[in-house]
Amino acid sequence: MKHVISADQFNKDDILEILNLAKKMDEILASKKVCKIAEGKILATFFYEPSTRTRLSFETAMQRLGGSVISTSNVNFSSVKKGETIEDSAKVLSGYADVIALRSPEIGYAARAAKVSAVPILNGGDGAGEHPTQSFLDLYTISKYFDLEKPLTVSMVGELICGRTVHSLSKMLRNFPNVKINFVAPEEIQIPAKYFHEGDKKFYELTDEILETSDVIYDTRIQKERIAPEVYEKHKNAFHFDVAKVSKMKPNAMLMHPLPRVTEISPEVDDLPQARYFEQARNGVPTRMALIAYVLGLEV
Ligand code: NCD
Image (cartoon, rainbow, N blue to C red; front, top):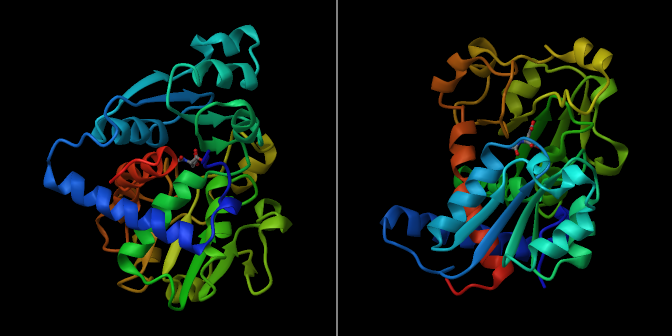
């Protein structure tokens, strides 16, 4: 059975297969035709943490595929509140649904669920661990503008210690050896050693050189819910992107952000050609359609 738990599971061929599937899904969406690829299938979304994009784009994806959705948008209204373990919840849900999208507060929940689940588990973020389905939509967005096989500089900026989106994305990018990765963050919230590879660069400040030479800047929110309050206070305004800064980026470079943004990017930046974060969020739908089809082995 196929699950999507960690970026480690995927080699270049898998990634390209899923991106290609996402492209087909975009064509289906553009055609406005009713799609019945997943007719009769049910997706369960089980989220222990707040979510707008991940849960709703998974649900939209399943409905666009012609399937249906059952959902606890807040596990406090489920038996988790009564002390049920992730294993028991996964066993129960896998008796109801054909695929489960799960967001959890701690590293390892998705893997624990996958061990006992009778149906595929899609990890929609496990605490400060990984967020591989986000990485597929990030890669899909990048691949619309850049060839991942050619030289490309990607700078991950902001809070990198707990930011699960950069953890998974940096792992996935390892499959494309021409991609150079810069990690840009104050030391206290820099990328953990296990995600840093030979050839990567670490910066502690966002310099003009980084702005001017990056093809992709992937900005992130400080994970207030996961770091100490004093660390949050110290760094909460680090690296604010305003129009002046973003205008230093190459005209064809991309400013990405998994969203939600809090104070990292001024709303005025939204009108600049480099701003790609809303398009990125929208790409969650075709990408998650592709991931559902991939784990369920649906004929596209
Ligand atoms: C991210 C997450 O939940 O990890 N959001 C998302 O899924 N698009 C980023 C964040 O919360 O900062």
